[in-house]
Length: 69
Image (cartoon, rainbow, N blue to C red; front, side, top):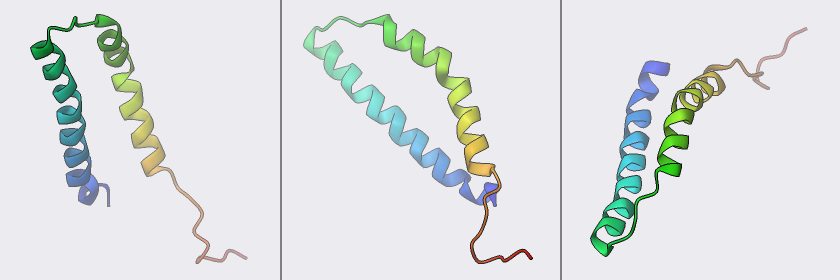
């Protein structure tokens, strides 16, 4: 089941990368200054956010269509 969802993760990752690179290019061409504050915080939070997404996605959840007892 998780293997079938991998193309969606890849697609969303690609969209996120493009969405992040466009404002950066606009700042560079506009002569704006690059701040390393966001980069360093995003780099530090990358692994925990991926792990949290994996845990939330694969956690067991109760299905209302299955009755126990």
